[in-house]
Length: 311
Image (tube, rainbow, N blue to C red):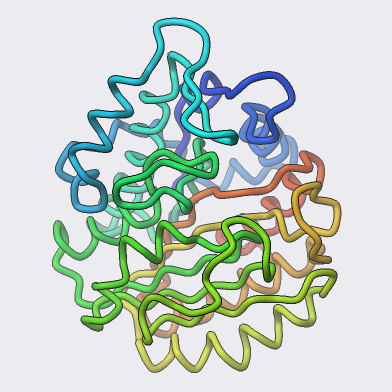
């Protein structure tokens, strides 16, 4: 089994100002952890290409792409909102982050890899069809899902989001595909925090499970076992795309859930079992949140160990 590891240097050049939690060190500490623990020895490194326009436009409007390109500063910063800011490298970084997700789908569908982990930024799951928001510019997971459906002709793709914040952009972009039965979205997130929605799914076929503040991993495990798994097994996906957020960790400064590294290992093992049962093990995992650097690197380490079959 080959597991691809997608990165790009521009992920380290996009930054949104001093002390912003979504910082270049996030991808750096993950890479350092995977290297120092020998995990990259079992992965195939790939430098992501930029996503082609047609892949981005399956998920986003031409106007959004033009607005982001036009807003890109020659120097300094250009804020889009209080959380989301472009620097001179942001637009390129976002193109390559989306390109990592697209490239991972392509590699898996042609049989060159079984799974992929995309250590890229900016993250994507808050970006809506026509709006960048919440640290996100292009929706990497939604772009991957639409690419699998349209470029590779798949009939059923599952998107799984375990970030502590609801993937509002992914849900908005893919709602019609969920209604049509081509996509199943399952997610957990902390109740009542940013972006403040997700309690009522946009599609009746989505499975959104809000978790109470200060709940721990056992609440997540119950949600996955009792609500996700019946839906995933009934759907029988041909490919799984994971929005892998690690900010539900008990040490994360932006939320109030109590997951630990063992919870990330368990949820990944559970999802791998579903993928092995229904879609030949095929998984694209792309980095979303996680803002305590030590907790992030350890949690991603557990996630990757399972993806490569080492845990």
